[in-house]
Length: 412
Image 1 (cartoon, rainbow, N blue to C red):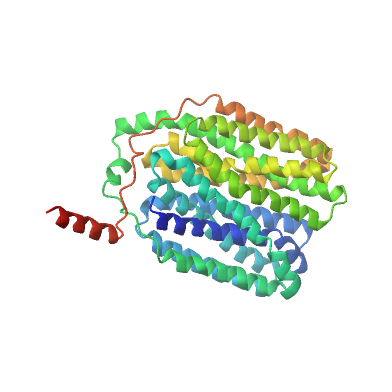
Image 2 (image 1 turned 90 degrees about the horizontal axis):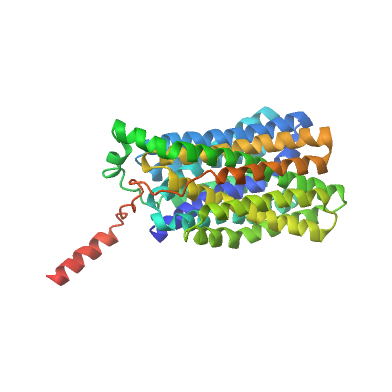
């Protein structure tokens, strides 16, 4: 993929993670300051993840029809920036919920468009590396979002939302440099296979994709349970907020190295094996959290959760190994959207399970989820590169055309 194009996609992926990570931990407190009860706060967070999942799926459905990605990403940056900025000046909880859902829905569409462009333009043999590097935005966004608490303590919530909105406007500027891919002269034939080809392609990827999607849902529930459970466990053992934040930042820092490294390794083969190991790491993190008492224990949990979180890029690359080009955009958006639905289930289900059986038992029970996901991987056959998975046509940057013309004249 063109390096400039990748950098633009990376920044468009980073901004939603940066803003979302910085706001989501403080939104419950902000909602409470507007008079929201704990029940309303819980429902508010669930609606955010539902909006994120809906935006992700909607983006994947619409992406094959998009002719001007540059323009759409600019519009999303502007709409999200305005919505987030206005959140700092609301006077009631319903205004906060409405504006937040606009921002999170736009984030879902943005993420889906980035994945679509990356999947179309990534070379077949470098898909893991590409998505592994894009996944670095997850960890980097978590680190950068950590300054939100400092901003609120020194300048208050209005300034937090003004700065967060301004960050979204950076996407508007960055997207102006995006090179719209050649849509779809050669790809239209791929996007419209005949009936016999459609039946053959559907039979080849439907079952593997379903297995991967169920596994992704289970692991997403477990990961959200792990992050929430670790925080609650550290709080129950008397650790300070600074210590909890430090352990969380450790996981984000490790992700900056782990994501691209494992993505690169997965391109060399055995992507399923690497994904299975990461699923097992998540199960170990949950089981250790149930019995952790010291900082060392929770640092180990943070390391394991960082490895577990690296499954995001690997699993998306694995989906690309099975799904043909004509179904890739919508399949990836559905796959990513299911993970956000797992967040809704994980956050709500963890609270309910803790009330019914206690924190330790709830964490131990959730270890079954990534174990089942690992077993599902055993039923996958070796990935097949479909005919549609050909290297993307080169982007017309103008410079390339000029260079080719110069070379031709020299040869003459």
